[in-house]
Length: 462
Ligand code: BGP
Image (cartoon, rainbow, N blue to C red; front, side):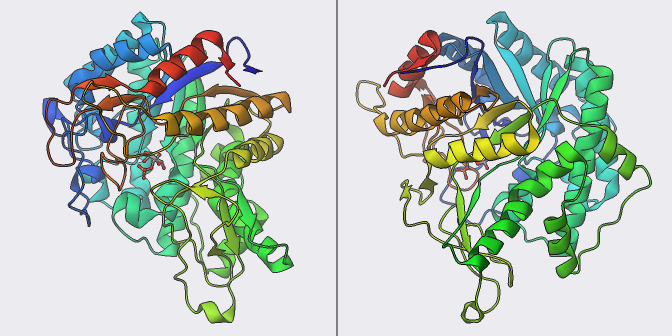
């Protein structure tokens, strides 16, 4: 039996573009998620999603019934600034004020992600994160929502998974970004985050803010020294490059070597060094699905094209690392490995490095759930996945990790980034198919009741 600290923050998470739908309603502008070319037309797009925009009161009531303490959601930048900057859309500003009020009505704390993959298309048209002016637009957007909601929303997350956005650019953004441009975008994203730290602390009384990368500890495929070297580099490029910038205000030596050896040179603005070294997060939000394994590429591998076994990330960089299928891990039906023990090791490693409170803001199992005739969803497989991972959270806390919360993916079924609505993550089932939105009736899954009991007792049944 694992008992959690009495004020442990049990939550649930979503993102705007994967749930809200209403992609052009009430003045909303288009984001890159609305316009990106989709290579797979067999899956739902984000135009309707699960219509959380219109169902938010019902959804929040259900989440309150489940008993969550925090709700992690993102604001669609293009509902506030349809063109990314300039004219404010009052209907959008009002919408999220209503969402926050609805949450507080049930005593649920909002944890708000400023941006979750959905950059305004108008800014993308000007070069997106390659253009330094996008940083300025982001800062103005962040200041606007801090001022509008900071009296009620005290916990903020900056930019969702900048590492996945850049490393898996083709899948997340529908385009391949060349290395030099990719890491100049890295710099702009991380500077934008530094401004968000600064302005949150200046504008919101008791405001707390953190980065929200996707962190997977990287294992070496074997005990060969060169495989370990490969793991060192991918741990840095995938994980620590982002959190060292956020939490230490620097480029770490391994990452710098990686950039140098790829002839990447980052251009700094005059104010950047001071920003980097003077504005820091209050906590780290971490998204965890599994760990990653790499090996050192050899001559026989030829040029970069190694595909890892999970999320089909192209994580082959000639001379540095190559994806490797970890034979010791099971996989889900979407070929993602499952590593609950790896969650504990990742938490301990992260806490050891940064010594900041951690909240898990994504962790979950995508599965093809079945709605029965009598309106049930028997997702014992999801309960099993969550049980295993939450057990490791408890073990990490016992080992001294300051883990303050667990907010799994996802509160409600939503449209997977690249596998549609059929890859369901929610505690709440939404009755729609890839191409027929139907009535989108909501149903509580078995995992809804399991999580409700866990939150109520604050104990994990053995
Ligand atoms: C994370 C994203 C989420 C969600 C999740 C599940 O990287 O932050 O938005 O997409 O992955 O992945 P997928 O939707 O591909 O199943």
